[in-house]
Image 1: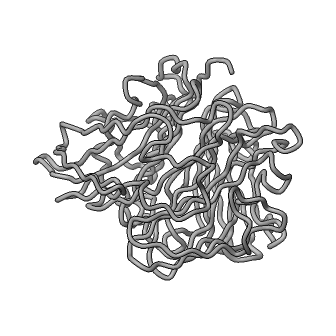
Image 2: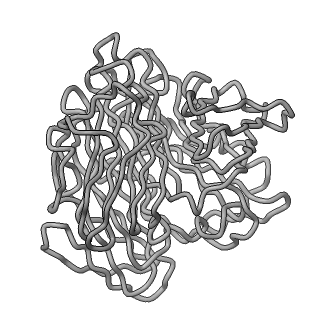
Length: 425
């Protein structure tokens, strides 16, 4: 694959997010279920890092507990972020896709601190890809989730066997029963030949990862989208694709995130376009109830998602001239956004929270936002807020014109050679 140049896009949604999400990443406890990737091609994970920061000006002591039992402590403050190099390949963070569909006791992390901290994970992969997710802290804990991933068009017919979708869960309490349901007929789950739905039991800190390779069957391209994950005690969920695509051109990238549960999603959203063409500047709407009507940019005629549809993919041509899209739905939904740049190989996907004017405050601060280890990336920040709001970035007051120019990349330097991650602050 040629060198990639996706812009580094970080979407900071201020004020309009629901109050739980507005402070979701700021927490004393963070659960990190393991990730996985396709075992072939350029999906294989390379260097991986944990980034920790805090708004607190005093020192905050934290403990990172890998689920192999060997804990270690560190100190972070507002002016001194902390970076932990996890390792390379199938590490404490990554479980091989050939080892999925089994109860795992020695992967993932629980991170606990004496005061509130932000936690994000960033990784490089396959010499050309990169990915990232932001921990949602204790706001990630819930009992009902709907899964999103790339759609991976034409992956099966072209035998693109490094397109892989997954969902990974971690229990926060002992003796937690978890069910993976609404899996379509014919779906081939890696390393699994049992009945559907899939039902497993985990203790605190244990995890389970379910993965589907898109080359195995036509339904595998998007069959994990809409999977219903339920539990009798709170769990944390990571999901997405490593690799995958929202298009059919044969290129690919990571698209992963940690999501929140049904109690914290909603029916009103604003999306801000990234730097790519319509084909992969997509919005993935995953309903929890069927039918669900979707209204785009105030259109009074809805698009109805029926149970046979499972989800709705909104193409990039639905953004308005300002690069925004306003979506209302008749029922609460799970929303995922695809962003990218000029090439299909340069894209990402993240989970998007709904709107609310209840959340007010600062994002202070996200650690070393332009870095993955020693690799420094470039790009822009997208901010969504109320009309006439005052927004300062690093104590610099932004005008509306400045916001638009930054979103369009006019103030950003040339992007990096490696595809950086797309994730939401």
